[in-house]
Image (cartoon, rainbow, N blue to C red):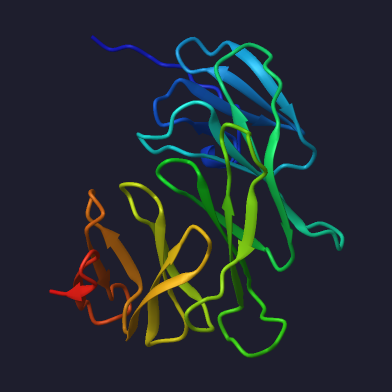
Amino acid sequence: FLRSIHCKQIQTKSLQSILAWTGDEKICFHKVTNTIHIQRGDDGQQINSIRISDVSQISVCQGESCVAPYPLACLIPENKGKPAMISIFAATDKNNEELKCLASKSFYRAQDVSIEWSPMGHGVLIQAHTDVDATGTSYYGGTSLYLLVIDKNQTDCGSCSQIQLPKEGPIADAKWEPAKGEEFIIIAGTVPAIAAIYNLKGQLIYNFGAAHRNVISWSPHGRFLALCGFGNLAGDVDFWDRQKKKKN
């Protein structure tokens, strides 16, 4: 039999900009004007809220190993000469629990911002991009990368550092090691770009060298990885053993 379904449009913006679910779907964060509602995932009941003005983007750690308290990143964009700001909060499923800001970072030249969580939720990579490079040295605009490391149990303040890229130029890709999230890889620079591994202190610990690569793909257990040249590149792939630092 046929059944009609009546739909009502409630938002015109992208879903990713207004809703964020935890990996276990126990909590949903719903962004409205100057407020983020925290709701239970099973029945939609509101259990808390965060009052934050002008927030434009929210992102929550969705890794399977990321459990309560759930870290949430809130972005306030640049406006009238004021820098953009990222603030990290930790939330649980308890009613009206006091929420504390674990870490925050302000920065300029952030026309577009992408947020990449570590699988455990203890670190987040923030990539800021602007279409125009103020120095005039890059056709691709200006790019910067920041690392925020947080303590979800709120026993210590979070730390933030700007990452020194392995090569000046655009960032092609940045990916966390998927098992423990204690390292991440960046591919950056004009072609041929350089790929490198960094630790949670933001220190470069291994350089893979320059190659025509723009995509990082880790194996689920984090031992092996592929550095790939896709899209407008030739399609070559290098397979690496992370433990031995050896190309197969």
